[in-house]
Amino acid sequence: MILKEKDKLLVGKFLKEIPAFRNLSDKRVEQIINDFTICTFHAGETVFYQTDKSTDMYIILAGKVKVSLLSEEGDEFVLTELNQGDFFGEISLIDGNPRSASVIAEEDSTFAVLERTRFLDAIKEDPEIAIDLLKSLVQRLRNATEREESLAFLAVHQRLVKLFIKLIKDEGKKTKNGFYLIKKRTHKEIAERIGASRESISKVIKRLVSGNLITENGELFLLSPDLFKDIDELTD
Ligand code: CMP
Image (tube, rainbow, N blue to C red; front, top):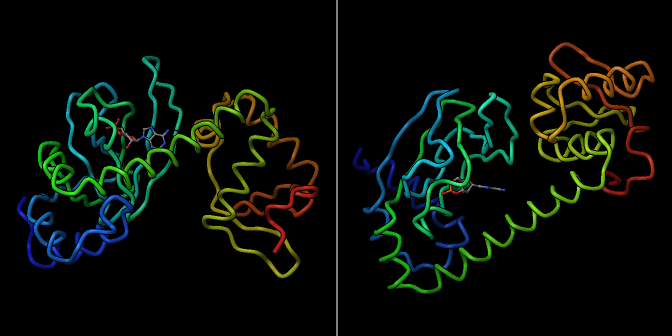
């Protein structure tokens, strides 16, 4: 779908926030905006599968996606979740090879889509774009290395605590008595986020619940500060 005026404004706003485009002049942004198209996906729909041969890059104008590895048996390992203003698809865009992961809409989502050839033209005209994109890629590589470190060296309990810390930072609320509230996830969803089996997550959570470190409260998890004692990251 070709961009309407209001979509152009939205794409321009987010382009300014993406490192690869942040330093472009207003005139250049205006030119690039015209190279984008818009597409929408419903919650649960797959934007593309790992190994697909598409090479477009996507910016999330609204909604949320997960970037996942899916096994033939139907197991899923969630690499990351991306929100409004984030981009994805840059790996195939750069090397022209099949997708490195599947991307699935977690909410109804709208994307601005840029074709590979258009992006390569933009880089030729503005090599700064490539340098800034490299910075984003390096940051993703660092995040991936950190995850590998967790998988290699941390037990399921520690990985779970690490995930809780991330969720508290992303969405958590602190209660007056120092507990943390985050949205409840199923054991399967947690397992997919930290590369553990659902059974091992159920076992660890059962232990934490009976130790009063986690309370399942309707749609929420209430997390005791004792779960994070000796961890500096949550001290404010
Ligand atoms: P691409 O390989 O084109 O399609 C899948 C996209 O998922 C990929 O580009 C990146 O945008 C994104 N992606 C793949 N692996 C990771 C990761 N480990 N962390 C964050 N994003 C990723």
